[in-house]
Image 1: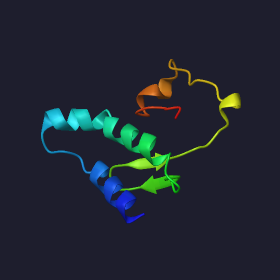
Image 2: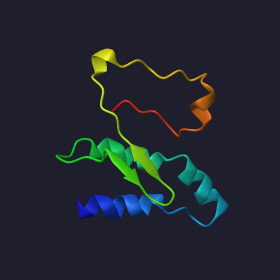
Image 3: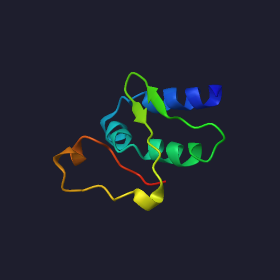
Length: 83
């Protein structure tokens, strides 16, 4: 679990330069982390760090509906990913 905490800490630190910062906002590293982490025996359900929040909700695929992309909240959340 310590490795997961270290990974989350690293992911939550915003870069200093503008180019890297804009890339960091895209949260691609976080998506890769979540894709890998959800296959582990223990996975992150909730994490709150200085610049990052992760809330995991597990839902059976049979009842899952794709998110509405026209929602005004689509800009607020980086991504909704079905893993």
